[in-house]
Length: 338
Ligand code: PEP
Ligand code: MN
Image (cartoon, rainbow, N blue to C red; front, side, top):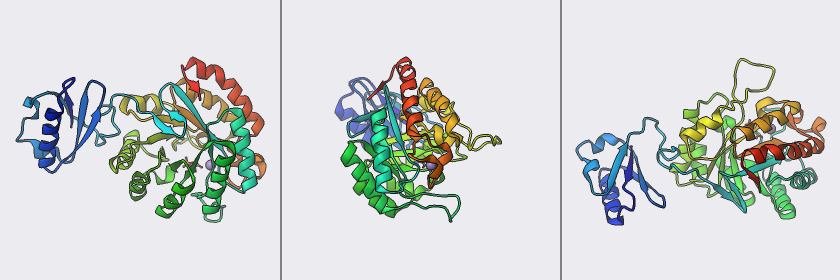
C-alpha cells in the first residue's frame, strides 16, 4: 500500500503517519518529491486494518498496490530515477553506452578494447571477470586479476567500468575495482546474491532472467532496493522462446512496459539477445527508438578467437559504424549521448 500525502504536508504530519506504520511493526519508505511526499508501506498491511489512515491530517489518498514490489514501482516513485555513475547519468534524456568484451582475457586485450570503445563514444567499458558459463569446461574468467585490468582500463581511459558478480566473494572483490556491478540473467533470482548487491554500495545492473516475467524481474529489483540500494538499472537481454534462429528473443516490449510500471532506468543488450553480431545493429537502433536509457554491446578486438561470445561480438569497425549510424536515432529519441 502507498500513502500519498497532500502537497506541502507539514513534517509533523508525515512523521505521525510514519510512527503509526512503524508502531504496527511495518516499514515506511519515504519518497520526498518537490511537492508531494509518498510513503510506501512494506509488510503485512492487515496490521493496519483497525486504523483509518485516510482520515489522518495531510493524507491525500491511499493507493493499494496489487504488485508485490513497491520500491521499484512507479506508484511509489512517480518520477523516473536517474542512476549516476561517475560523471554518467543513466536515465531520462540521456543515452548510455556500455561496450566491451564478454570476458576479460588479458590486460592488453581489455586496454585495446577500452581505448577503441571510448573513441567510438561509449561511457562504460564492460568485461566479465567471473563468467557463468553453460559448460564447466568453458573459460570461467580471470576473477580478481581481471578486475585489476578493469581498474587499469579506467585509469587509462577514464571510462566507467562494469563487471558481473556471481557470489558474495565476487562482490567483495568487485567493489574494490569497478564502478558498477552486474547481476546476470542466470542469477536474477539468486535472492541471497541480490541482497548482497543491496549492501554493496555500488550501482547495480540487473539483467532479466532467461525465463523471467516482468513481475519477477521487478521483484528481483525490489530485493536490492529494499536492502538500501536504490541505484538499480534494469537490462533487457532477451528471453527464451521457441525460436531458435537467434540465441534468445529480444523482448522490446519490456521497455515501454517497464517505463509504465517502474521508475528505474532500463537498457537493452542486443548482443546476448541475438547471439549473432549481424543482428546487433538493427536491434540496438530499435532499443533506442522504443525508449531505452542505454545499450550494452559486446565488442572484441578479434571475435573469431574470443574466449567467450565471439559470434555475437562486434569488431571495432562495426561498433564504430553503429555508433555513427545511431546518432540520428539518438537525436530523434530526444536523448543526448554523454
Ligand atoms: C554478460 O553480460 O556477459 C552475460 C553473461 O549476460 P547474460 O547474463 O545476459 O547472459
Ligand atoms: Mn557475453
